[in-house]
Image 1: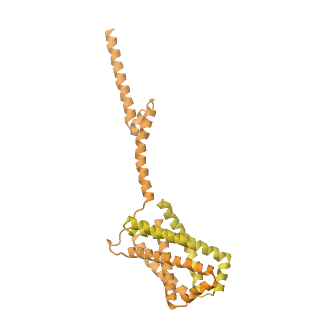
Image 2: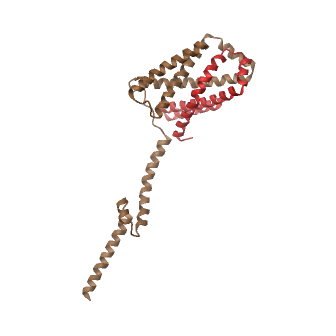
Image 3: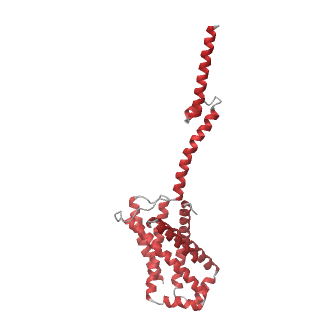
Length: 97
Length: 191
């Protein structure tokens, strides 16, 4: 994807998706931090929770990738280093997705 | 006879000159005035072709520029030159928390791996979460999340050109700080 304007639009869309999901997740996350293994398992076995979590993770990582790329474009001055940082960001995101 | 001949030659020369003038005008000119002035002559097709030829170059220039605008983007101002203004500090913190949260997202992905691997691996997380440092880390994480969220909403408004006035920008900045602090406190009180 070379076109920057589509990237910009995708970043805004993912941001809009993330706004309600973060409220949902933070509410649950503080409970999850003190859960047993069985309780967390029960949390993820419900269909609603797992699907919402899946959407959250995908959109979050993509949003993070785009954001980090823009930061790298702005502040990394040499072109070689810029390309290297972009590559590492991409590799990290695709590895964890 | 000679008088008539003279008259004929005059008209012939006049016609030739005028036709050449029209032809040249129709071929070489590119403005719309001449196009409309010769509309009722048969030369308009020639003119139109030439008009297109000249304008293709112009449109190509514009298209090239548009393509450059789409493929690249204007970079943000460099940090070391400018004086620190409140809005700039907000933007910097937005980016900083963005980097921190992206690292946090990676950790979150690792956490899901630990759950998926089984109960033996999940103990690693439980031992980590029992520490006090983990709680502090979690607190900072929630603060960063809410700051990034509310400031992101502010930027979303900006990208539609709303709330861009000078006074409103500062007010909304303070509102962001207040809201992020309030939500983190609310969340930690409820837990």
